Each structure stands twice: as structure tokens, then as C-alpha cells.
Image (cartoon, rainbow, N blue to C red; front, side, top):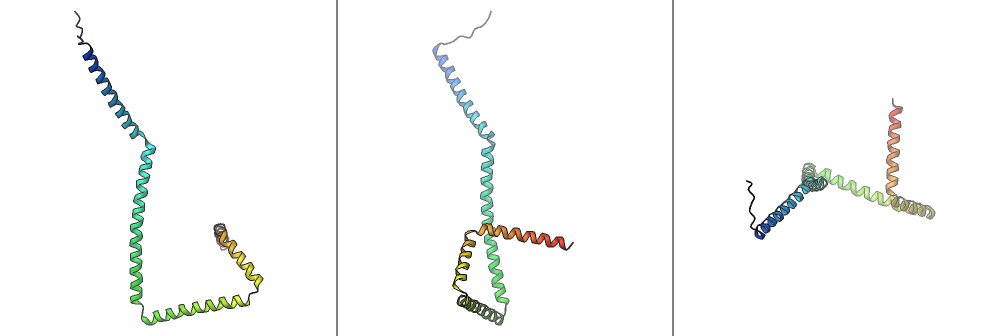
Length: 153
């Protein structure tokens, strides 16, 4: 005596098909969710962007605080510096500026034209090749520093 389930025909078949479709749709959503969780590259990129944004925000905040503190320190230094010292400093700055301007005019008057042209050409080359020249100067300074340290030993 075996019991066989009775089928109601097309209605039960349609119901089973609907259940299969729902199950497939749920399975598809589950697979997509699992794939999203397993996408480590995406998670790393999101975290990196989040950390970058946080760093930019913190840097901006700290920069603002530092500027504020520097302004306060400058104001305090001005308050504490006697007026006579400030006046002397202003006069000294003006005198240095005037002397530099006078020296520039004298150099321009006394320097022959060919030398001025060569100097202008050299200055243009330096401006055009600033980065390699700075790197070379830094390398030279480091080498001299190391050599000096070895001589002193």
C-alpha cells in the first residue's frame, strides 16, 4: 500500500513553477549579496577613499588651527616688542631694501652687456631645469656632508 500524492493537475504545476521562480530570484539576490561581500578590492577601495577623505578633513582642521595659533603668536610678539625696536626693525628693513636696490643698479651699470646676456641665458636655463638642478645640489650637499663626517672620525 503505497501512498501516492494526488496532483490537481495544471494548478499545482503552476504553483510549483511560481515557487521555483521565487526560489531562483531569492537565490540570485543571495548570490549577488555574497559576491558583493566577497569583493575585497571594492571594499579596500571604499575604505581607502574613506580614509583619504578623513585625512583631508583632519589636515584642513589642523591647518586652520595652526594658522590661528601662528597669528596669535605673531600678535603676541608684536604686543610684547617695544615700539622703539619695531621702529628700528622697520628702518633696518627699509635700509636693506634701498641698499639692495642701489647695488642692483650699480651692478647693472658696471656689468658689460655680453656678461649680462650670458647671465640672463644662464638664469633662463636654471629656471627651465629647476628640478634636476635642485636634485643635483641636494646630492652634492649630502655627499659633502658624508665626506666631512668621515674626515672628522
